Length: 426
Ligand SMILES: Nc1ncnc2c1ncn2[C@@H]1O[C@H](COP(=O)(O)OP(=O)(O)OP(=O)(O)O)[C@@H](O)[C@H]1O
Ligand SMILES: [Mg+2]
Image 1 (cartoon, helix red, strand yellow):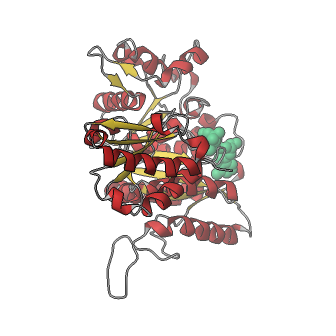
Image 2: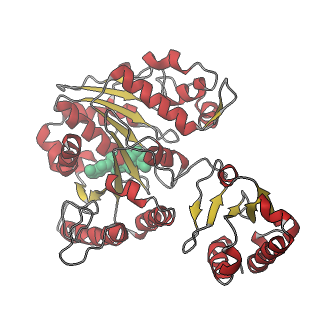
């Protein structure tokens, strides 16, 4: 049976056996369309040249014959374009491994582009709390980190982007301090150029006793309103007045920029959605994250997801753009005699995940991106968060945060908080 995963290996094999034909081509694009069917896109001049045209038709036929359900008849399987860049528009082309003039382009049903990694945003560092699996203590850790940073006189802006299962606002704001609107409202109003009228009512400040201040932008306002109807529209791209399309992640970026300009925070903490999801992609890759905290708990499910993501970044050649922003966090570490063994296993799995992203150095060479498994400063070294009865199954995190003291927070979240402090001062 031939499936999607065979497309690139087959193409590599067939094209590899016909390098002579390829050497006469300026470029060849392997276009995988929305349904996962392959077309070749080639320079216009080839179409006019009978010899070359029949060569590329033979080439296409050879690939198509081996990936059948994922190909077209030759007559509709080849397109000719004057310009390669134009043909690639709206996609992130990547070179087919081992070739210099063959690119692959993917047309996806979602906007999520895990491979398009925005540069680190200037201004306040944006720290993204991300996990492959849900329920790993990510939002609780974000709440505790927010509190700790605000205790150190920081102005902390927090965004709840887990719109499909919101909750952070109830953690950090008492009911009377919940703002009228949330991220969802802004994204919907922005579609009709009405977003900025909401800005002043989009955040609540916390009454927790801290030297700094906490500004929280929830997923929705105190009255969620027609939340489901709004949610169905938030991920819409927008057509601007100049009739230009604008991806929703770019709209989200505008929101974060506007909030930053208004609130002037020292740091921005973002609660992303769990999983290889479109919203998570925007948080991790589009918002110019300074640091991406990758929450993990022991178990194959965690690693399968992260491995898929790392493999994608490797294949698209962007791993070096993102690798130095990643940091592993171990959520819900057992609080008993199993702790050390648990952390050791987690570290070994994390090292297996990160190893290929590290530089390989020969004896005598130096690289600031080469780490041993036992290096505590390596991004794979898990920052442990202990499972602790006091933080388990809280009805109100707000109540918990009112009562906690520094020692209690540090006992559970100290390693994460220390890391954040170092990250913010480096
Ligand atoms: N350090 C901890 N010790 C014990 N229980 C915890 C700890 N941190 C979080 N929990 C509990 O684990 C559960 C999940 O926590 P939380 O909501 O923070 O996870 P999450 O990763 O944000 O989940 P989701 O994917 O649903 O957003 C909650 O019941 C919470 O009270
Ligand atoms: Mg959460």
